[in-house]
Amino acid sequence: MRVLFAGSPEIALPSLRRLAAEHQVVGILTNPPAPKGRGLSPAGTPVAELAAEILPGSPVLAPESLGASTRAAIAALRPELLVVYAYGRIFGPKFLALFPRGGINVHPSLLPRWRGCAPIQHAILSRDAVTGLSVQRIALQMDCGDILASREVPLDGSETAASLTETMAGLGAELLATVLASLEAGTERASAQDGSQASYCGPLEKPQACLDWSLPAVELAARVRAFNPWPVAWTLLRGQRLAIHEAAAFLDEAGGEPALGAAAMAGTILNVDKSRGIMVQTGQGRLALRCVQLPGKKALSHREFANGVRDLAGLCLGA
Image (cartoon, rainbow, N blue to C red; front, side, top):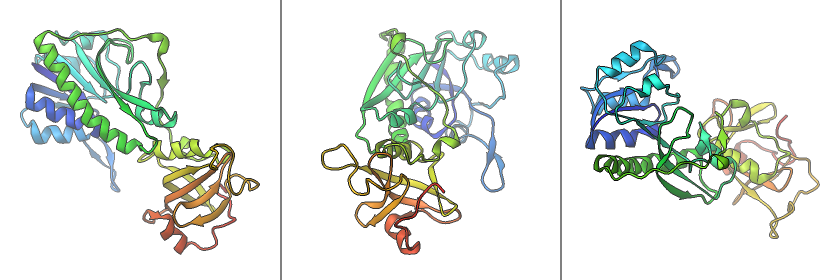
């Protein structure tokens, strides 16, 4: 099939590679170049960079809008099908009319749960026991199309946004190939979503990454995982921003109330446990900080950090 692929970040790369190997990719639609690096020079998206490498003959379109000029450029490519993975825009009827076979979208959640952006992070934040990936027909409303295929991904509570994104990247390529084969053979089956079961998620924002120590340790640990690698959970230590890259929650053996330090104020560093981490009192339980970073410094394990920063016990984080 003649396919136009729309996507931007790293999660879409395995799907583009698979698509290029098995179908005719007539063009790429991606987001415009954005400032990057210390010099803030404009840089293309990961999808644009990969397309230049593996599809040198295919045009890469990076428009600011999907207006008439963009639609005309796409129409000239004569695509049959639109394939989307993490492009980040909603398509209107004039745009979708360019594709005789319509469009399909790869979405990293089990729709209708977590419609919208950042579904990977929200599954972690909500401590879901299972998430997954869906391939849907593109509808005019966001993530409301009929489901062509889906696959569950169990969560054990150790996943970060980075590791789960990597899982979804590979799974997306695999499931996309299966769906495209069924479309070519005319054997695809679609099922409507149950809108009554829908949940929605918005984009992550930097202020969300500031930890509120009055929250339970399990919720704070989920935030640390969900905000890795961006925007990275943080707190204040002696007035300096302390990034927290890895942490774990601890309760007592009964699994209920906090263990040691129950009388300490939330945010207080109780002690440095060499095997567990820098133990911090929370609203319920203790959060063990295992990898932290001060501004301008490299990320350190809790042991390395405690060796360089003395007298941590008794300090109150967040101030």
